[in-house]
Image (cartoon, rainbow, N blue to C red):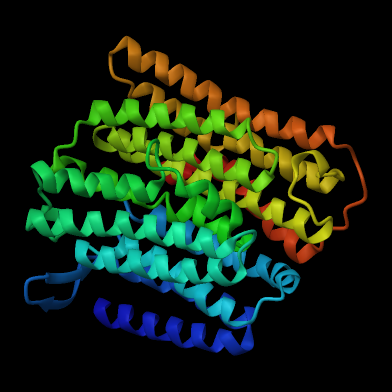
Length: 426
């Protein structure tokens, strides 16, 4: 039964994604909305059994649900946001085809239990996003696209080699030691863009077309935190070292924001900081680690997507990305404040995630000190960005409602979900 649901939903989505290359946003939006059909797969379901690869299974459980739901919700919001932006880019309608398949890859990354098929889902995400950067990006987009493609492939292939060397392809029974364990970890960290392997991230996230940035930055790289949390026990990674490495990444990414004069580059650097928090969260033990990671992922995803969508409004309506030129009116300033306060963790869903991260800090003076710096720096850069935008001064910016409404909804969701958290917790 569940395998039939999977195949039927996938066939419909692929058919509608192909139709969207001709029909545009309506087909793309319906295809993205249909992805909720995967949530019906409430128990482990075998799709096939293959030589060497083993059982190809899918599963949607409570641990996977937030990541799938956020991917679909943001995929739909960005789809509705995109038409005016794509007019600005003079983009062909096949953009929607690649966009739908890109969002579908997020769902596949999470629901597959066979790690070889997780790798294949990662490949789908790389190919679709690379095409969008190559054809519709900014600046030296083809060089940026190649840098992104190479680094993304290196991360995926290291992950694949590590999984293959471990001999354990099913996530529920995954075990790895030595080099195999190290390769899987390194592959995940490269794809998350953490400290030392982050060089590709600011270029790709800043120069991608903005609807892609709104998904690439908070969702695509963030989903790997789920697999970091899921595989850490079987791979026996040094979790206290990972916790401190994540905090160091958060501090470093926050510092990078202060060098930027371009809002998309600043948001890209802030993604490095937030990936650091996710690494630290994923390294925590038990349900605390999961809750911390899921809450931080969700809060960051909606707020960061809103930040990139806000930058897209500026690009379309006043033709600039420079922080000192981002004039505001009341609606845009409202979205900016909602976005950056949510990202800071002073209020909104990220506040709870940061509190849980502090609860799980190892009993080590260096870890406590790093945590304090990480919590402070990841809040400070957001107020710095609010100040930079506010200082540019007011002006009439007639943002179109079809861009503004999805941006506002994305900015509001961290606060709405905070209010609903007690109900969701039960």
